[in-house]
Image 1 (cartoon, rainbow, N blue to C red):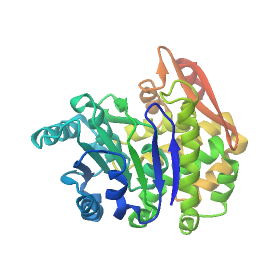
Image 2: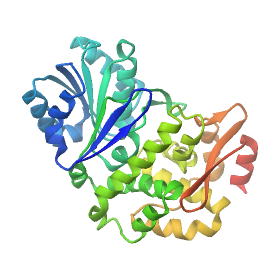
Image 3: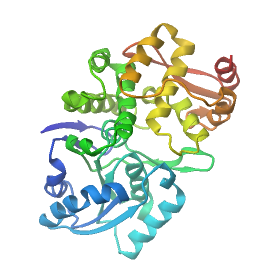
Image 4: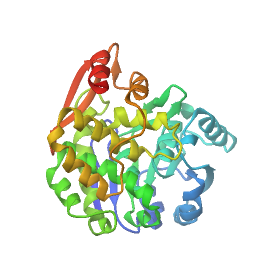
Length: 346
């Protein structure tokens, strides 16, 4: 077992251990006095892991209730959020109880946001079961849902009480979902860790499990460092959004349908690098290709730019975007929205 301590306004630990999902009740018991748990998950993860999680929780003295919703980004909306609120209310969940978010990034985001809002805040635990969720979205306290205006535009900062990462759960991922997570891993190498990037270059999607434990630990450690220095995303934490401004736009252009977040981030990183650090483009694209990720999009740039105007990182008439001119170092660039659209449209 490895542990990483996250020293934010509400400190917590990330446990990284193969097989830990079957021990989750023991670990959760150590961070709460509650004995009632609402497990929130999606239909795919429910069929794979809910029995294991509930058995562990019940063996450690918890009373459990279970809520499952259809998997996919399309469910990360206000309608699903309302159903979660109703479920918590009907089952008399109180401030002394706890929510467990069991699943990928969509589950963690919406369950975390529900926990931040319901009764003005109840505790929750993250048990991420996808690579993207383990290395990125489960750590740092960002929770959100999508609205018609854009992705993650309604949310809150709510730090979990605990994060439990079991790399064995990644073995049940389909190749496209594993690739999705690898986009975020490659992002971490680009923005902060050249050695990680080099390690990724020497592997591919077929044999990445050989280094998966190191990958998960390294990425969480990088995020811990960034989040502790800028918990509420007002400065350095923006570097974690490398590729995301255009990536979210590409996802929106595809209506969040059959196009993963990782695919969008991969192409977004390439589009920015092509414009601002073309000497790195070939190296980045080669690495992304090794993990079966796209490097270009059919979406016209002119149709993507309106989505960027709704980006969370926009302030008044300006927008911040991230550039990596060398592997392992990120730069936050702030410019007018008009200039950004002009540069990207050239």
